Image 1 (tube, helix red, strand yellow):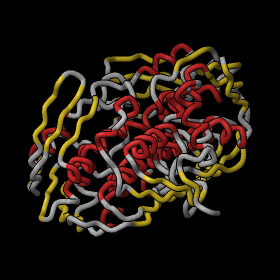
Image 2 (tube, rainbow, N blue to C red):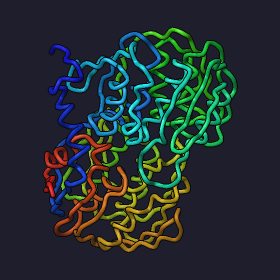
Image 3 (tube, one colour):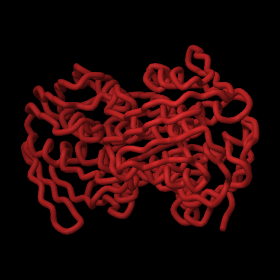
Amino acid sequence: MSARNLTGGDFWGYNDIVLHSHSNTMSEKFIIQGGKPLNGEVEIEGYKNSAGPVLTASLLTNEDVIIDNLPLVEDVFVILNILKDMGAKIERLDTKKIRINTREVKPENLDFEKFAKTRLSVLLIGPLLARFGSLKIPRPGGDKIGLRPITTHLEALKKLGAEIKEQGDFYFFQAKNLVPTEIVLKEFSVTATENVMLAASLLPGETIIKGAACEPQVQDVGEMLKKMGVEINGLGGHTITIRGREDLKGVEHTIIPDPIVTVTFITAGCVTPGEVNIKNIRLDHLDLFLDKLEEIGVNFKKGENSITVGYSPNLKPARVQTFFYPGFPTDFLPFTSVLLTQAQGKSLVHDPLYESRFNYLQELRKMGADIEIVDPHRAIIFGKTSLCGLSIESWDIRAGASLVVAALLAKGETIMNNINQIDRGYENFEQKLQSLGADIKRIKI
């Protein structure tokens, strides 16, 4: 298949998808008839949270970068649009494979409106600052799950020598002479870790990040940077050492499978009748989750790069606390909470990381779940309860997807509103569920 330029209308339906999701998705909803058995197999797409830093890493070289297993989701299209607006040349090589060249990028052409649409855009700061020395950005966007300031990013970049001013809704960066140094992050911030890694990759000398995040997406972009010529040690731990170079090579890189989408389909498979085989996954990114599933009593069988999940009617309660990776990921908790509504007994869920992530529990309560929200970080789930369909809201990507899982097991019809949130992070979500036998339709209002 010959490569086609990104501006062409046939870039896997690229232009249609972007226009559709920006202008129409807010007036669309899912209609779900619950109680249907799910059977068959589904393949997991690339990880959205990995695609962000992988795409922005292309700014660190003038050579071509080839990216495979690109997830075709709204947040990724926003980043591609931002890069294209700044002058990047992007070509389609295959369905999920692109070639990108950023030789002619000009940061002054950054589209502020698009930048504010996704939290992934914050990952443009490190590479653009290191390469061009000055930058103006608006406040980043993303999920409404509590306070998510970029203070940790700013303090880390100041340690590298950046001068930063905040005026109104904008940040102004100047970095005439960034220098490698030792940086201690005040929190295990994934995107702050990635931003420092990206910026330090163009700095000759040694940069040390202490208190670094070690999530799979951090490791993924780290492996990409190593192939580009950066010397990186400590990936997977909380101290990362980077020895950068002024000239980095082009690279070909395949994005890791999305563990959160994997968990979505695992949960759907165990709360509905039938058996679901989930392919193209990384089991080593799911260790604590699968251990918790065993404790709860879920029926599953591991394959080499797959997992088969069967209906699990006799679930047991559990205590679940999220923590920074390799702890139990916060993004897995909404799905686990849905699962625990079907467990016999009292379960406790605790998310100390974000103070506004329990909106989905309010929606589950509307559906009939017996849940006591103790405080902004803790809730008690009493099971087993029957869920009933009704009209509910999607507050963020994972909350929305978890409520779709709840709707699949609920009695009757569920109307899921605000599905643009789900489209930001899930590729062909309803089509994949339909292929398994789910009764789910996208309807224009």
